Length: 558
Image 1 (cartoon, rainbow, N blue to C red):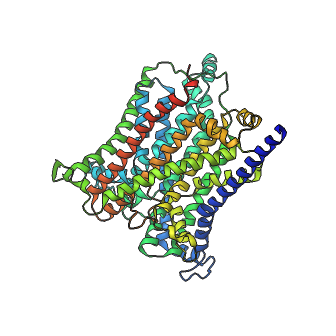
Image 2 (tube, rainbow, N blue to C red; image 1 turned 45 degrees about the vertical axis):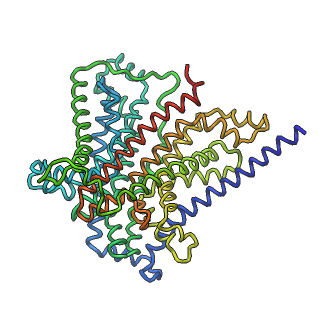
Image 3 (tube, rainbow, N blue to C red; image 1 turned 120 degrees about the horizontal axis):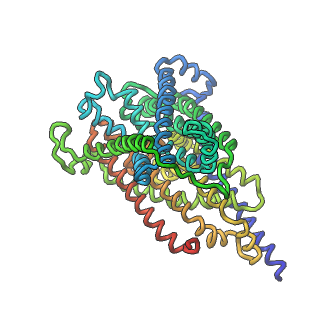
């Protein structure tokens, strides 16, 4: 009896695992592969659906305005990437390689822009440097509506991501290397070029790739503050929403997808080349006091933190001012959202973010467990892992447009989802899937393989062991995935701007519509409402994490 029950349990687990892997791959096929295939197909047909091959490309190359947008996009991508990477490098160096006072505070401030929609810095910059801006004279004869505004807005938005990547890499350097350099009478300059730079070169290149991809695919900042300076992301919106030219919108989306795919491929290659920098004998680097160095980085980090907080504070102040700049008395009138049903949009965003965090976290963790802890069926597991990597290279605007072409087809039985909350949740989960997947896989890799072996020996289902053992042990990563999905669902605009319906307007889209209609103060109020919600959610996440970890993982404490 005992010899038969063990294979029977394993057989049931194998069948269930095969079914779940197949289901996950089919869902990816419907939610990612087929929509992207549809957008590629649309780029090769005319408005009547007839195949025209490369004619659309020839039409694009014959349109000077569209070519100018391509050049502008690449220019902004390179400029902002170099600027943000340089500033983030200095900021991360100050956090990890100096005796910086209040280091935790500077880390927290650097992450603040993540909680704000990309529309917020653009609105704040208008109040600071626009035609009626308080600091308008700082720009002289230049205008904030154009390249200057795009550079500043995108720099604010991309800065925390670059800081996270670089500070993580710098913090992983073995302190013994610096000690060896000191013993060999190498000064700070030699340590910088022979220890610091070699240790983070792959992280530095990855940062360049990530920031470049973020900049060229962002829609919010160029839409609000770009003025007449056209970029590919805004061209897609104009072609689809303004001119109903779906073929040209699909073609531009394809062009926008290519640089992102190349950057993703380059980053993947760099990650494979990256080697382990620390081992069990490594020591954390403890920088020696240096008044000149520490003073310089304290000043630099303080100025950067002040600039980041000033952008948030300006948007908050503008949302409370009665009538800028003529009546500066404070009022909550802009939070009434009289011109639109703003509170319904805000409620829709809360609902969408909550559903995204709930179902997205469960889906991501289960799929990651199947990939990392599943037994056998290597082909399906590798396929699922490969599909999970694809969303990272797909810009949100391209994904949203692909959903239009696929889910709005009259012959598609899934058309009933278009304009509803379900499709908004699905698109958001797919858009931000890869980061959550990598987080869950990393956490599962740290678990001992004996968990599944012990479960098999006790004739316990692997899935029950996953629920009772693996999930509680990975709870910190699960909570991180949940708050990541919630915050991004609250702040995203690019993927959902094409997908909402009359009853599913979202707060981030409401900010865009208010700004389009010239109601910039209510737009600032809605943006601040999103920021405040994301901030409260993050604080609640930190508090809940402490309580849950104390209840479920007290065994890890001494």
